Structures are given as structure tokens and as C-alpha cells.
Image (tube, rainbow, N blue to C red; front, side):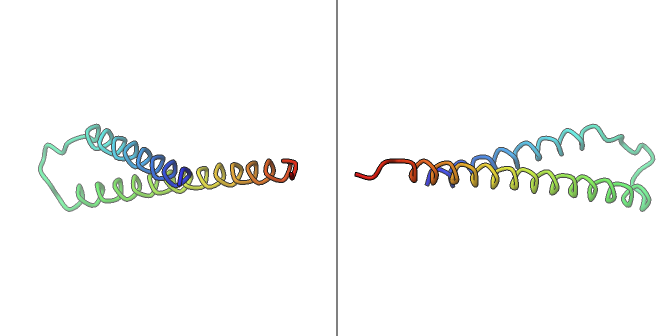
Length: 87
């Protein structure tokens, strides 16, 4: 179905975008010159969880926007079918 393909494409693009954002963030984080410590790992864990939470929020926002667009497309299609004269 046309709308399912568009939803899948939009979700794929969204996930790709979020992955690229995460990679860019990972590259920009400062490196620890003193070695890996428990404190460094705990701080990194907090940063990663925060990034994950933000990515999930963005994905949910995209999903909601996609659903809303699909709802209005369906609404317009149903309204146009009702307006067509019956033969």
C-alpha cells in the first residue's frame, strides 16, 4: 500500500538521521587522556542514556507527525469520495 511504503521510508530516513547524529556526537565527545575510570564510564553512560532518550523522543515525534499526515490524507480522500456525484 502506498501509505505504508511512505511510512516505512520516513522511519528509515529518521533512523538513519538519528544514527548519523549519534555518530557525530560520539566523535565530538572529548577523549579521556588519563585512561578509562569508573567515573568516566559513568559519565559516558549518563550522556549516552540522555542521547538515547532524546533520539526516542524525536522518533516518537516523527511517528506522531506521520500518523497525523496519514489521518488527514485519509480524511481528504474520504471527503472527496463523498463529494463525487453518484451515477
